[in-house]
Image 1 (tube, rainbow, N blue to C red):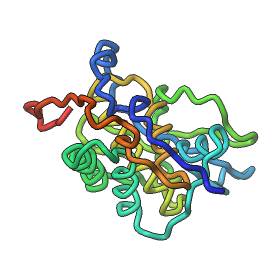
Image 2: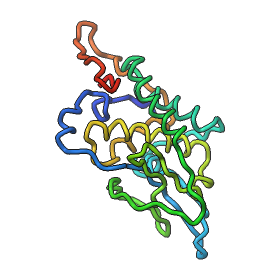
Image 3: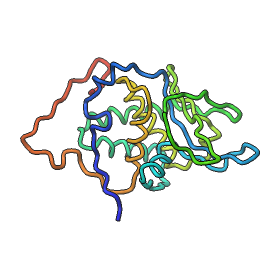
Image 4: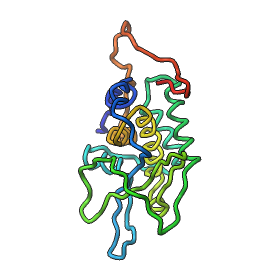
Length: 219
């Protein structure tokens, strides 16, 4: 029996709880990590985005390998994550996915990325390491380790795009680590039927909205 994933938006960015995050100060850059296994010669034998590894091992989710292009998968998952929040929210986060995809720079072999200590991960497979996969620069580039990227399937590439988009939104409102972004991505790629966030909410309930700010953000 497949797991039924219920979106609890309050766990993520879309509960409008950014005011408390903003006081913490945002981390510079930000990026994504991968779980990489190498042989004795240092050659990669397997690679997986940390979000999906944690989702499977730490939280018990199962991802669904998909042969669709990474960008298509990432946009579909983002829509699933923000389901029930209104089309303008979907469009806002989706624009980040498109921006990241168009500004991604694959680094040549022999070039790695400086470690960013913002993941606070607690698990890693034995004899493997968590390695920096991507780094979002102040120049709006997303630098990606090209060697690791080649070992990712389309679903893992999509997970990186979704991660970078969500984490960028989180950082815009003061997030200092990627824990929530990784959990959101893990759920977004999990098997199972999702429920609209509005399911079970009384019809006479109130919902608060804000007007877009000067940067076009609906938050």
